[in-house]
Length: 252
Ligand code: X2W
Image (tube, rainbow, N blue to C red; front, side, top):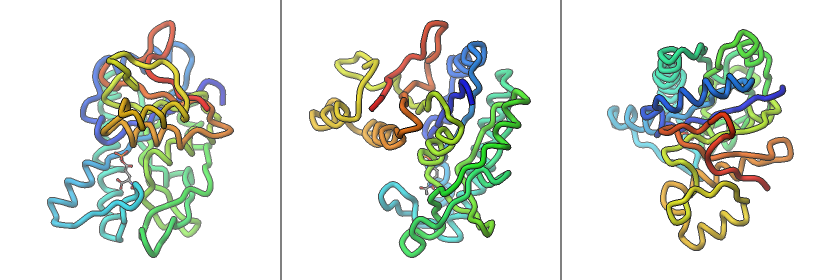
């Protein structure tokens, strides 16, 4: 599809989406872009699990998902967080519809490693029909990272992976990782453009540190033949102007 932008909103930013963020979405739409949002919700899942005294563990960035954890993840992602984002968009005059990746056959997955990780999905197929239908009706699809197997078993999917798969399937021009900083910073200045090699160097040199490391690594991992550009942008300040999208652009 022409001019599609996929935004990945991590769980740590969903409470902090600000007026400039919604203004940026209006600007993108004005420029003729179709907007799709894929969201996470890791921190909210953690807090529900904690309140129920259920231990949780991550292995290589994937949450070990027992049947009980799956039920909670689906409830929090497709319920609480998904509705929270849709409500905020609607309050800002952005018509949207909240769905899960398991709806309309969008995300089909296999078990990634059932023995080690339980109900965690590895995406095997993306069907864009429902997303396209919503976009054609001028809705912003807001998609929770739940997939299903061929046998309709729901599976928990890492939100970065879900966003990258959906962006590729849509032929999106850009995948934007919405974070709490305006991009990768070097001496307090936003770096406009960088590459995976330079990022590795900056991690080695300590220029990229702390919570930024998993964000840039997720962004790099999503680069592929069909998705040649990803960006890190801020959910707290205006990231789209009439002239350009502000943030750090990463290309191969
Ligand atoms: C993630 C899905 C949510 C997510 C989880 O259970 O936390 C797996 O790890 P963030 O906020 O974007 O990290 N799923 C399999 O990715 O949320």
